[in-house]
Image: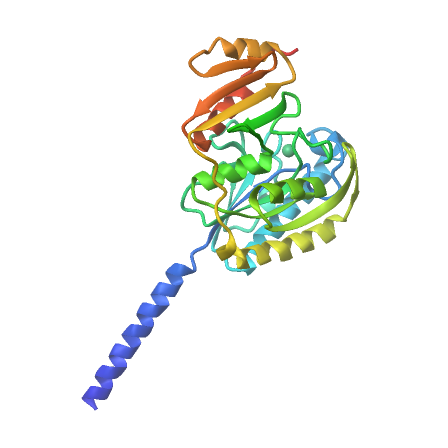
Length: 302
Ligand SMILES: [Zn+2]
Protein backbone atom coordinates (compact mmCIF):
# COMPACT_ATOMS: atom_id res chain seq x y z
CA UNK A 1 0.00 0.00 0.00
CA UNK A 2 2.75 2.39 1.06
CA UNK A 3 4.72 1.57 -2.14
CA UNK A 4 1.59 2.23 -4.17
CA UNK A 5 1.15 5.61 -2.45
CA UNK A 6 4.75 6.52 -3.05
CA UNK A 7 4.39 5.54 -6.71
CA UNK A 8 1.29 7.71 -6.97
CA UNK A 9 3.09 10.64 -5.39
CA UNK A 10 6.06 10.35 -7.76
CA UNK A 11 3.65 9.98 -10.67
CA UNK A 12 1.72 13.14 -9.69
CA UNK A 13 4.94 15.07 -9.15
CA UNK A 14 6.04 14.00 -12.63
CA UNK A 15 2.76 15.21 -14.09
CA UNK A 16 3.16 18.56 -12.32
CA UNK A 17 6.69 18.97 -13.75
CA UNK A 18 5.43 18.15 -17.24
CA UNK A 19 2.49 20.56 -16.85
CA UNK A 20 4.78 23.38 -15.64
CA UNK A 21 7.18 22.73 -18.48
CA UNK A 22 4.47 22.85 -21.14
CA UNK A 23 2.93 25.98 -19.55
CA UNK A 24 6.31 27.70 -19.94
CA UNK A 25 6.61 26.43 -23.51
CA UNK A 26 3.21 27.90 -24.29
CA UNK A 27 4.34 31.52 -23.65
CA UNK A 28 4.02 33.18 -27.03
CA UNK A 29 4.59 36.93 -27.35
CA UNK A 30 3.68 38.70 -30.59
CA UNK A 31 4.22 42.24 -31.88
CA UNK A 32 1.78 43.47 -34.55
CA UNK A 33 2.99 46.52 -36.52
CA UNK A 34 0.02 48.25 -38.16
CA UNK A 35 0.25 50.66 -41.09
CA UNK A 36 -2.76 52.07 -42.96
CA UNK A 37 -2.06 52.28 -46.72
CA UNK A 38 -2.51 48.51 -47.11
CA UNK A 39 -5.84 48.36 -45.26
CA UNK A 40 -8.74 47.16 -47.45
CA UNK A 41 -10.43 50.06 -49.25
CA UNK A 42 -7.64 52.61 -48.81
CA UNK A 43 -6.59 54.24 -52.12
CA UNK A 44 -5.70 57.87 -51.39
CA UNK A 45 -4.96 60.55 -48.80
CA UNK A 46 -8.73 60.94 -48.36
CA UNK A 47 -8.61 57.85 -46.13
CA UNK A 48 -5.11 58.35 -44.66
CA UNK A 49 -4.88 61.84 -43.18
CA UNK A 50 -6.62 63.21 -40.08
CA UNK A 51 -9.17 65.75 -41.26
CA UNK A 52 -9.78 64.10 -44.62
CA UNK A 53 -13.38 63.22 -45.35
CA UNK A 54 -13.01 59.44 -45.00
CA UNK A 55 -10.27 59.25 -42.32
CA UNK A 56 -12.50 58.59 -39.32
CA UNK A 57 -14.18 55.64 -41.08
CA UNK A 58 -10.93 54.18 -42.29
CA UNK A 59 -9.14 54.40 -38.95
CA UNK A 60 -11.99 52.15 -37.75
CA UNK A 61 -11.22 49.69 -40.56
CA UNK A 62 -7.49 49.90 -39.71
CA UNK A 63 -8.33 49.18 -36.06
CA UNK A 64 -10.63 46.29 -37.06
CA UNK A 65 -7.88 44.68 -39.19
CA UNK A 66 -5.43 45.00 -36.28
CA UNK A 67 -7.97 43.41 -33.92
CA UNK A 68 -8.56 40.61 -36.44
CA UNK A 69 -4.81 39.85 -36.33
CA UNK A 70 -4.91 39.94 -32.51
CA UNK A 71 -7.85 37.50 -32.49
CA UNK A 72 -6.23 35.15 -34.99
CA UNK A 73 -2.94 35.15 -33.06
CA UNK A 74 -4.74 34.47 -29.78
CA UNK A 75 -6.83 31.65 -31.28
CA UNK A 76 -3.60 29.99 -32.36
CA UNK A 77 -1.96 30.33 -28.93
CA UNK A 78 -0.46 33.84 -28.57
CA UNK A 79 -0.38 34.72 -24.86
CA UNK A 80 0.87 38.31 -24.98
CA UNK A 81 0.33 40.88 -27.73
CA UNK A 82 1.69 44.36 -28.32
CA UNK A 83 0.17 46.35 -31.18
CA UNK A 84 2.28 49.15 -32.68
CA UNK A 85 0.54 52.05 -34.41
CA UNK A 86 2.87 52.65 -37.37
CA UNK A 87 1.11 55.12 -39.68
CA UNK A 88 1.51 58.89 -40.01
CA UNK A 89 1.28 60.49 -36.56
CA UNK A 90 1.14 56.94 -35.12
CA UNK A 91 -2.06 57.79 -33.21
CA UNK A 92 -4.64 56.27 -35.54
CA UNK A 93 -5.75 53.09 -33.80
CA UNK A 94 -8.85 53.43 -31.64
CA UNK A 95 -7.37 52.11 -28.41
CA UNK A 96 -10.72 51.62 -26.66
CA UNK A 97 -11.78 48.94 -29.15
CA UNK A 98 -8.94 46.51 -28.31
CA UNK A 99 -9.23 43.61 -25.86
CA UNK A 100 -8.10 44.59 -22.34
CA UNK A 101 -5.04 42.32 -22.38
CA UNK A 102 -3.43 44.02 -25.42
CA UNK A 103 -0.94 46.88 -25.07
CA UNK A 104 -0.59 49.55 -27.74
CA UNK A 105 2.50 51.54 -28.76
CA UNK A 106 1.62 54.98 -30.15
CA UNK A 107 3.11 58.42 -30.79
CA UNK A 108 6.36 59.57 -32.37
CA UNK A 109 9.27 59.96 -32.66
CA UNK A 110 10.32 56.79 -30.92
CA UNK A 111 13.10 54.25 -30.95
CA UNK A 112 12.59 51.43 -33.49
CA UNK A 113 10.01 53.49 -35.39
CA UNK A 114 7.36 51.19 -36.92
CA UNK A 115 8.64 48.34 -34.71
CA UNK A 116 8.39 50.40 -31.49
CA UNK A 117 7.93 48.18 -28.43
CA UNK A 118 9.92 45.26 -29.84
CA UNK A 119 12.70 43.51 -27.94
CA UNK A 120 14.25 40.06 -27.80
CA UNK A 121 11.47 38.73 -25.54
CA UNK A 122 9.07 38.47 -28.53
CA UNK A 123 8.52 35.18 -30.38
CA UNK A 124 7.07 36.60 -33.60
CA UNK A 125 6.08 39.79 -35.43
CA UNK A 126 3.26 40.49 -37.90
CA UNK A 127 2.66 43.31 -40.40
CA UNK A 128 -0.89 44.59 -41.01
CA UNK A 129 -1.88 47.25 -43.59
CA UNK A 130 1.55 47.40 -45.25
CA UNK A 131 2.28 49.03 -48.62
CA UNK A 132 4.92 48.70 -51.35
CA UNK A 133 8.12 50.74 -51.50
CA UNK A 134 9.08 53.96 -53.21
CA UNK A 135 11.22 52.16 -55.85
CA UNK A 136 8.26 49.97 -56.88
CA UNK A 137 6.19 51.32 -59.78
CA UNK A 138 3.25 49.25 -58.52
CA UNK A 139 1.49 49.62 -55.22
CA UNK A 140 -1.14 51.89 -53.72
CA UNK A 141 0.59 54.90 -52.11
CA UNK A 142 3.91 53.06 -52.51
CA UNK A 143 6.63 54.82 -50.52
CA UNK A 144 9.42 54.05 -48.06
CA UNK A 145 8.95 55.59 -44.60
CA UNK A 146 8.29 59.09 -45.89
CA UNK A 147 6.48 59.85 -49.16
CA UNK A 148 7.28 63.54 -48.65
CA UNK A 149 11.03 63.08 -48.09
CA UNK A 150 12.59 59.91 -49.45
CA UNK A 151 12.91 58.42 -52.94
CA UNK A 152 15.16 55.45 -52.22
CA UNK A 153 16.58 53.52 -49.28
CA UNK A 154 19.33 50.89 -49.32
CA UNK A 155 20.88 48.66 -46.66
CA UNK A 156 24.34 47.29 -47.44
CA UNK A 157 23.84 48.38 -51.06
CA UNK A 158 20.49 46.63 -51.66
CA UNK A 159 17.21 48.53 -52.07
CA UNK A 160 14.86 47.83 -49.18
CA UNK A 161 11.16 48.24 -48.54
CA UNK A 162 9.62 49.26 -45.25
CA UNK A 163 8.67 45.63 -44.77
CA UNK A 164 12.23 44.39 -45.37
CA UNK A 165 13.71 47.11 -43.13
CA UNK A 166 11.27 46.35 -40.31
CA UNK A 167 11.82 42.61 -40.74
CA UNK A 168 15.58 43.25 -40.39
CA UNK A 169 14.92 45.24 -37.19
CA UNK A 170 12.98 42.23 -35.90
CA UNK A 171 15.81 39.96 -37.10
CA UNK A 172 18.30 42.02 -35.08
CA UNK A 173 16.36 40.91 -31.98
CA UNK A 174 16.09 37.31 -33.27
CA UNK A 175 12.35 37.69 -33.97
CA UNK A 176 10.85 36.25 -37.21
CA UNK A 177 8.14 38.09 -39.17
CA UNK A 178 5.44 35.50 -39.87
CA UNK A 179 2.51 37.37 -41.43
CA UNK A 180 1.82 40.32 -43.74
CA UNK A 181 -1.35 41.96 -45.06
CA UNK A 182 -1.51 44.73 -47.63
CA UNK A 183 -1.98 45.26 -51.34
CA UNK A 184 -0.66 42.69 -53.83
CA UNK A 185 2.55 44.66 -54.46
CA UNK A 186 3.31 44.98 -50.75
CA UNK A 187 2.77 41.28 -50.11
CA UNK A 188 4.96 40.33 -53.10
CA UNK A 189 7.77 42.62 -51.89
CA UNK A 190 7.78 41.31 -48.33
CA UNK A 191 7.67 37.70 -49.48
CA UNK A 192 10.48 38.31 -52.00
CA UNK A 193 12.65 39.70 -49.19
CA UNK A 194 11.93 37.34 -46.31
CA UNK A 195 10.25 34.23 -47.71
CA UNK A 196 6.81 32.67 -48.29
CA UNK A 197 5.12 33.82 -45.08
CA UNK A 198 1.36 33.67 -44.47
CA UNK A 199 -0.28 36.69 -46.13
CA UNK A 200 -3.53 38.45 -47.05
CA UNK A 201 -3.86 40.55 -50.22
CA UNK A 202 -6.42 43.20 -49.33
CA UNK A 203 -6.54 44.69 -52.84
CA UNK A 204 -5.18 44.45 -56.36
CA UNK A 205 -3.24 47.57 -57.30
CA UNK A 206 -4.55 49.45 -60.34
CA UNK A 207 -2.46 52.59 -59.81
CA UNK A 208 -0.83 54.79 -57.17
CA UNK A 209 -4.31 56.02 -56.15
CA UNK A 210 -6.52 53.15 -57.35
CA UNK A 211 -7.20 49.52 -56.56
CA UNK A 212 -9.71 46.73 -56.80
CA UNK A 213 -10.29 46.03 -53.11
CA UNK A 214 -11.96 43.37 -51.02
CA UNK A 215 -14.39 44.62 -48.37
CA UNK A 216 -13.41 45.40 -44.77
CA UNK A 217 -15.49 42.43 -43.59
CA UNK A 218 -13.76 40.07 -46.03
CA UNK A 219 -10.27 41.34 -45.17
CA UNK A 220 -10.88 41.05 -41.42
CA UNK A 221 -12.04 37.44 -41.80
CA UNK A 222 -9.00 36.54 -43.93
CA UNK A 223 -6.57 38.32 -41.58
CA UNK A 224 -8.02 36.44 -38.59
CA UNK A 225 -7.59 33.10 -40.40
CA UNK A 226 -4.15 33.73 -41.89
CA UNK A 227 -2.71 35.26 -38.71
CA UNK A 228 -3.78 32.10 -36.88
CA UNK A 229 -2.22 29.97 -39.63
CA UNK A 230 0.99 31.99 -39.33
CA UNK A 231 1.33 31.12 -35.63
CA UNK A 232 0.90 27.46 -36.62
CA UNK A 233 3.83 27.84 -39.06
CA UNK A 234 6.08 29.64 -36.56
CA UNK A 235 8.55 26.77 -36.25
CA UNK A 236 9.29 26.99 -39.99
CA UNK A 237 10.11 30.71 -39.85
CA UNK A 238 13.57 32.17 -39.30
CA UNK A 239 14.49 35.72 -38.29
CA UNK A 240 15.42 37.86 -41.32
CA UNK A 241 18.94 39.12 -40.64
CA UNK A 242 21.11 41.57 -42.54
CA UNK A 243 24.86 41.78 -42.02
CA UNK A 244 25.63 44.14 -39.13
CA UNK A 245 27.12 46.71 -38.79
CA UNK A 246 25.03 48.18 -41.63
CA UNK A 247 25.65 50.81 -44.26
CA UNK A 248 22.52 52.76 -45.18
CA UNK A 249 21.94 55.14 -48.11
CA UNK A 250 18.92 57.46 -48.21
CA UNK A 251 17.91 59.50 -51.24
CA UNK A 252 15.83 62.62 -50.65
CA UNK A 253 13.39 64.46 -52.88
CA UNK A 254 14.93 67.79 -51.85
CA UNK A 255 18.54 68.94 -51.83
CA UNK A 256 18.70 71.24 -48.80
CA UNK A 257 18.18 68.57 -46.09
CA UNK A 258 20.96 66.53 -47.72
CA UNK A 259 23.29 69.51 -47.86
CA UNK A 260 22.58 70.48 -44.22
CA UNK A 261 23.01 66.92 -42.91
CA UNK A 262 26.28 66.55 -44.86
CA UNK A 263 27.85 69.09 -42.46
CA UNK A 264 27.50 66.38 -39.77
CA UNK A 265 30.57 64.66 -41.18
CA UNK A 266 30.86 62.37 -38.16
CA UNK A 267 27.56 60.76 -39.17
CA UNK A 268 26.74 61.38 -42.81
CA UNK A 269 28.57 61.17 -46.14
CA UNK A 270 26.98 62.94 -49.10
CA UNK A 271 27.05 60.40 -51.92
CA UNK A 272 25.41 62.60 -54.58
CA UNK A 273 23.19 65.68 -54.76
CA UNK A 274 20.19 63.88 -53.21
CA UNK A 275 21.76 61.02 -51.23
CA UNK A 276 23.26 60.58 -47.75
CA UNK A 277 25.10 57.52 -46.52
CA UNK A 278 25.64 56.52 -42.90
CA UNK A 279 26.93 53.57 -40.93
CA UNK A 280 25.25 52.08 -37.87
CA UNK A 281 26.31 49.31 -35.53
CA UNK A 282 23.02 47.50 -36.07
CA UNK A 283 19.46 47.87 -37.42
CA UNK A 284 18.20 49.36 -34.14
CA UNK A 285 20.76 52.19 -34.31
CA UNK A 286 20.12 52.64 -38.05
CA UNK A 287 16.41 53.06 -37.29
CA UNK A 288 17.19 55.77 -34.73
CA UNK A 289 19.24 57.71 -37.31
CA UNK A 290 16.40 57.27 -39.82
CA UNK A 291 13.95 58.55 -37.18
CA UNK A 292 16.14 61.64 -36.86
CA UNK A 293 16.10 62.19 -40.64
CA UNK A 294 12.31 61.89 -40.72
CA UNK A 295 11.65 64.02 -37.67
CA UNK A 296 14.12 66.88 -37.57
CA UNK A 297 12.61 69.96 -39.18
CA UNK A 298 13.95 73.42 -39.78
CA UNK A 299 11.45 73.99 -42.61
CA UNK A 300 14.25 73.23 -45.08
CA UNK A 301 12.17 71.97 -47.99
CA UNK A 302 12.29 72.56 -50.84
ZN1 LIG B 1 1.47 54.61 -43.50
